[in-house]
Image (cartoon, rainbow, N blue to C red):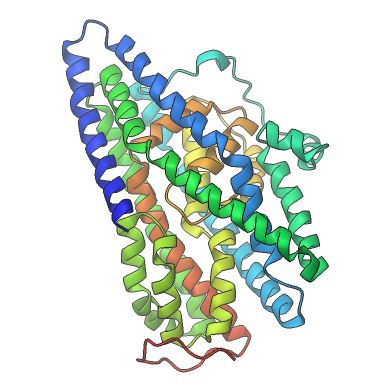
Length: 420
């Protein structure tokens, strides 16, 4: 917790220093564009570090999430119900992000501000989207090692689904291997933490470069983008609560009250993972039996990150708009389908969405450099989507408990309920 708070403080310091240094460079340097190019070297290094962890992180987290479901009838039944809810919530979240970014078109203002990072070597952009044939043939890897080497995240997801499902079917003989993959997952989460230690420096460089090149006026554009995204988050909360009310009735308001503490914790730490213990405790006080909550909630952390999924479509299309790339409706729906799959490899850790977005942009010929537009404000966006992930998973777990007839009466006792 202290490390997260320290990183948050450093990121905020980097943001402020970036604004100050960028302003000084913009107003006093003879060649502010050259200074911006120098800062771009730092942000490029950070982006490469993010891309470095894509393949092992997605493979390990997704395989373990699927394999640990088990193969018993009860586990299978609960798993199917949970995944059914997760798919519905994913479609809602992704669709809402797609709808709002096309309605607000925040990327147009960014393009007019002149703050768009240069594409660099890949300046010849092909704006045509993936065809159905391209998508189908690209779906399955000819070799998983080739897919990993080229960071083809969609192919990694497909292989991981087959691998995890087969491991669950094998049973006890696969346990040592799954334990090893679980160890890889924990190692990659630790590596992700190491990489994120460079975030304050990358934030400083990204913001300083943008301000040096375009001046302070770009901050108003970021303010508009953040306001539009937060409005989208509020709308997503309303939709999720209304759907939860359809199954839980007025009790959904009691559920939101029980989840208040972990939601605030997730918001302030920008990490839904940090709020996991308190979320589990709140669900048990609400009446969800421990054995069900302990099974569904962890799966949700890999398969049901509602706030992060909405952000993925919102951010990806925003970057395309900033570069003047018009994506037709079929391409955007294809992107939504891709994100529907790739988002299932995200872990509930700070700024994991950047990993998925970075991998998705390249598949649709959108410059990955566009991530630099979001790097300076991503922490503030991550706070909102992390809190939303807690609400979404809390409602999902309670609804599945209701379907299973495993939702008891609320309890004031915070103690963990006995397994049964």
